[in-house]
Image 1 (cartoon, rainbow, N blue to C red):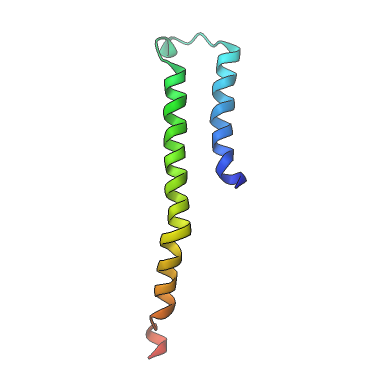
Image 2 (image 1 turned 30 degrees about the vertical axis):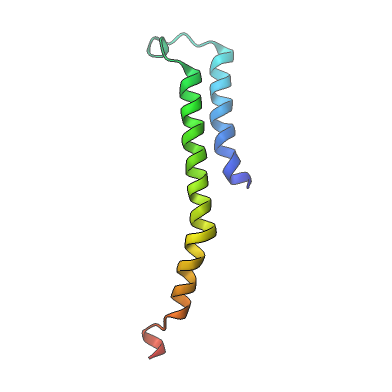
Length: 75
């Protein structure tokens, strides 16, 4: 579980640090950091859900089918 939460904290801490330091970079002017943060968190959330669906449902079924099928050595 810690491996899933770690990227969220890395992104959040870096954005909070940027807001705290109040960097005056020319490329960042006019960019809404709140929108970027919300988009990144949303994408990471969807990715995490898809990864868990893969691990919990699709992968075990695929592994069970592989165990049922005899390989070339089983002939």
